[in-house]
View 1: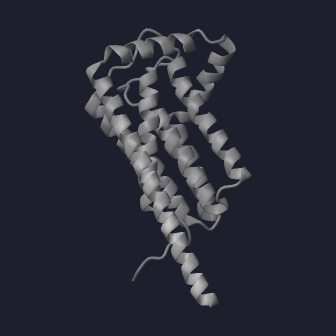
View 2 (view 1 turned 90 degrees about the horizontal axis):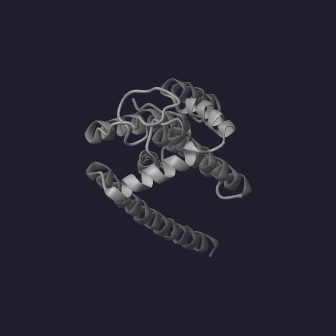
View 3 (view 1 turned 60 degrees about the vertical axis):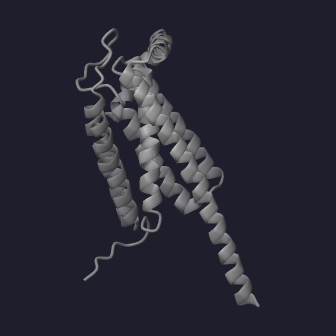
Length: 231
């Protein structure tokens, strides 16, 4: 009887997990469709989006000077060289903490999927950066924001690993709140320093969310444990 009950429990748990993934798949599909629509509006230079960018940018450009100074410093954390160092250190910590698969997941998702995914979209859209207000200088295209995409994926990847270890509890709740705050501040910082339109940062957030989900979805069974090379 105990064996039968265990089988029934595992079957029910499997069904619940499958339904949970189906709901998540549906949600990420809606986010992806929303990102496509948002990107199309950027591509077509929709008047309502121009109004949105101008209104939001003006609000942040008139924020207190101390906050702008903080954001100029904070935005440097999302620079490619800084992200590379941060990602390398965290990945090595995971590796030395006996989770090399988690390290590989973190590196691949942050460096390859986020980095090249964002770069590809930039080359397709080729949106010029804003020039009316600049606190820092940078080249390249504007949409989507690479800082927003990479920060979303980096922090999101760490949250995925945290939920794998600790599941849903008070600690992961606090970590999620801190992670979301860090992502939003990075998005705001890119607007304040004048190198992105607000719509760029939202596009980066949506793109990063989709890329993160795809990586997490397909790596679900392979994120933990030692690396084993087949002979």
